[in-house]
Length: 182
Image (cartoon, rainbow, N blue to C red; front, side, top):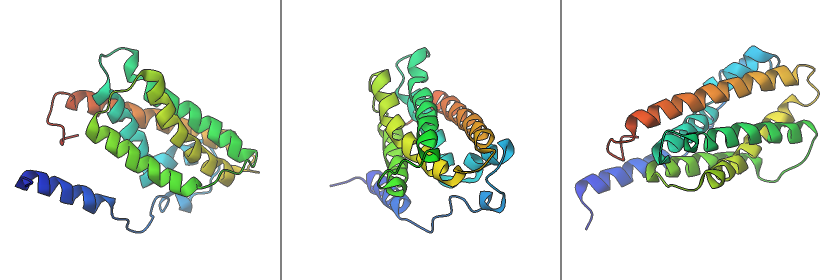
């Protein structure tokens, strides 16, 4: 039999998994997808981006064995593969299931944060990197043909690094706290 605390946690997880309307880009869509500032604010106001970027940093800090380079494998892998995906999207490379993979990235990174699963550094970069490719491809498709696509991507990558850093800081502060607090 499950304890009341465990039941509450499972109900909360199940409620969080329910999908409401997709509102990932509501604020940003008012801006044209053009230029550094537009690219910078996009991850900050797109809920899917915000959640994924912060979760990668959180997981990296919570699962790291030390304050060394273990912390950076996930964030660097995500940022690098986000750029690779964006270039593929700009070139028109078609990948199947882009939106479902973006949704799956949120589920997987959330589970990684909760589980604090420790994996070797390169493996963590690959896990989040696979999902980052799909995030990048989606934006590459949107930016194809835009003269300022590279400036927009530079803004997105800058915000991505800052969000990863925020997740790292929060995760580091929560490392020795109760597992559900993160």
